[in-house]
Length: 217
Image 1 (tube, rainbow, N blue to C red):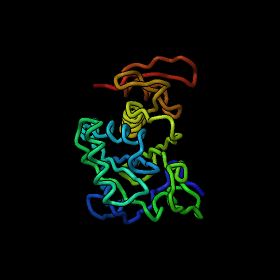
Image 2: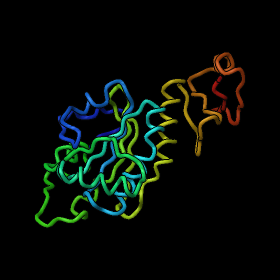
Image 3: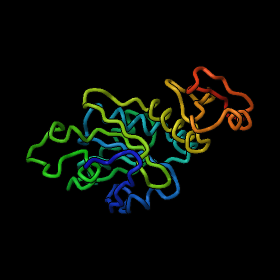
């Protein structure tokens, strides 16, 4: 059974280039993003880690911790970060899990239970380890995105999705297609017009089941 939205993530003890700790300990009272990679020193993944490093201030602004996962060892991670920082032009201050035994990849259902790392492996052997997970302070999975190896992840979209999750959790609303911070949100069907007007000041009724409102402030 795969990890589904609102499931509690496994509280595994992980080894990283910044020491060992449990995943729940790492998340703490924060939001967290786990982004996984099939192998160190691969071209697309290097650009992605560089993009994550460039967004350090944005993660901090949102009270969000980031952590990478790659199925190589700690020493490889440390060497790889030199390349990541060269490409990204920013310090890669986040930890990277050394998932050499595939425990994390299997627990998060990125790989089947009988998967193993063959001698002379290539990234194709762990190609499904290309996922973004957004985890809430309650340690529950809020969103996941899976990408193929030949399409780089769009971390502007990861930020947008994180913003949507955070405002939805704080204000008990939903966000429409292509929503950006500052735009109108969707009023839940369970909220009456009267209560919605009292909370938001006004609502824009597009359809009986689709009402939009501005978040005060």
